[in-house]
Length: 72
Image 1 (cartoon, rainbow, N blue to C red):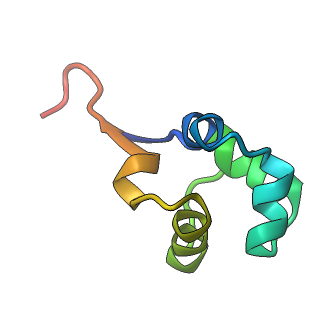
Image 2 (image 1 turned 90 degrees about the vertical axis):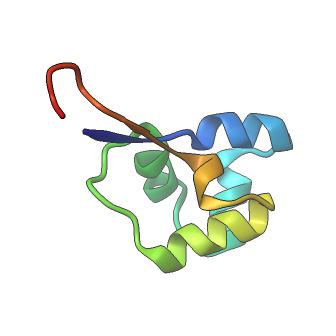
């Protein structure tokens, strides 16, 4: 099982740069880059809420769940 962050897609739809999002939610651009590229193992709910608030979206718009083949 894998959860994929599709933040890059939502940023493109909103015509927003990662730097601007980071500034709007009060975190570093480096931290947002790690979230966007999936280099982190988890995200705090309060961070997710801030991202959704700025991008005017739902958590399900940013997260995609996939199953790996051969798992049930």
